[in-house]
Image (cartoon, rainbow, N blue to C red; front, side, top):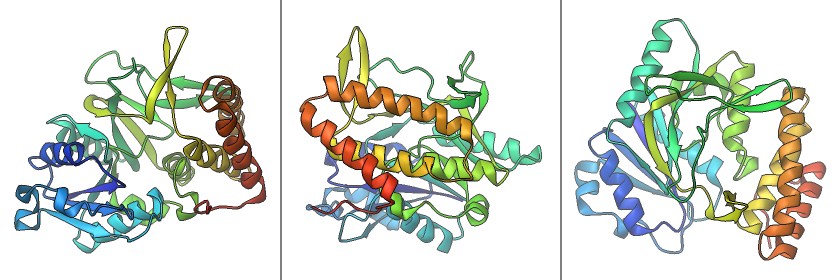
Length: 299
């Protein structure tokens, strides 16, 4: 059994219902984990999705972060005896055959004797021209793995959490998401940790999903660069720096990802508005990452 877990925070009602409509024919059960939204998402959900308890809303009553919300959903799925969990952000929309394609690959890899960490779809953000999102670190380079055919399956070091199909047995072996990260690098940390434990993640080129990555992107010399809020950049930089301090993570990943972080720091300081606030929050995140000050940033 595959159980879907949607992490919601101040969701758009239309987008949330579109996601549930796409999942209804594909999954036997879905949990919506509400991270302390000011408006209860329960009344937003169409009665057809709540019928026969196909969809259940779990309220956390405070914003406890993506990692904790995912862990709560995983615990509910485990209690139902789920063999897999399928994680989603509220701003994703899977293709009608996405779940079956992911399951086919996960089961085929398992039959081949491979310890599967997670399998994930190729996502597209309609606001920008996305390259394949499948990442491998080779030496000091971050390489995107191509999708020459819809049948291609590629090995990756980690996947974005939304759309990731994860065997429950892998979660039992690797452990849960890190609550203290709150948001950002949660999926990267878990993927790297799973790799160190001997599990392999895969990108499935034929499984497709629409996913809005952050806020409207910034155009720069004809390229559309993803953009997040200053607060989100705080978590991004804090958690990245904190993971660089971990002794067990690969040094080449730290150097490759760290160089990308330096480029982001320069770009968002110069081109993201309001520039001063982006610079301030990124800098604060770096300081807190070095200090080990984790969890939710309180006012």
